[in-house]
Length: 319
Picture 1 (cartoon, rainbow, N blue to C red):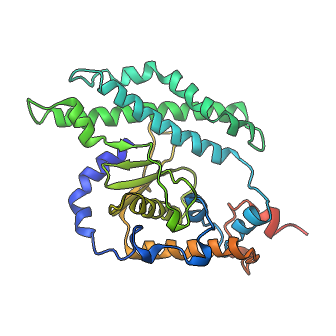
Picture 2: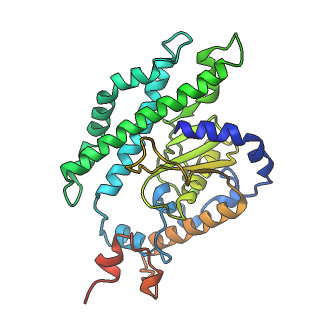
Picture 3: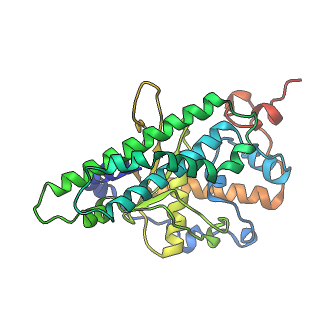
């Protein structure tokens, strides 16, 4: 997550030049749901998650009650999200209690590594029990290796940012630098009732009140960017403030690397095109829930996303 701090501050001037007038803001009437759909609500992720061109996955899950069971990939994604957030809090805890010294941040996190891992696993113990099929010990151990990569990498990046800023002046304040350059809010709860969102929308992080983001793992999907758009709209409705930039922190963990890889991660200007695309999908999905009509599967199997749970279990079952 600290990677975003380096990325944003290195691209700030370029990003500002991309800003253009936005007509579709979360606080504006143009983005609100139609009157007939005002009582239909759906979680942000359920709207942005868009593997099916007809959205039949939503119908099968919400109307037919054919729930997509917890699998290893979804579980791993959730615990990785939590790990980034907990590590950031630990970094903040250390910095706010130390005097002008980041040299021992890595050692501090290393000492607390087992505690971090245990806290994450305990938080998601219920999810672990629901995984189908039951995960192997190898999968669990591989995940613990990923935990360690996150801890070490986040400590290194945070130390690098702070030490660089400290080196630029004799009078720098380490706590002030942390607030300025590592200002992540990972606990924000947004409400977007007029947008058709569920009771609570919780982005993974907001950086400096200027970039809203979500952490994703696994194979990159083109619809991932819609999640940032959704949270930006929710932020705008909730705060009545503009949110121009979004990011999907797409993280990979190659076995040959000791650190996470973020090659697909980029900060985007959330323009009218992206907002319009998301709102069209939102309206279509809310209509499916309201009218309860089966939209049908895509006409050709090749048009389906094979990562969709319902691909083989419902839509293209073997006869």
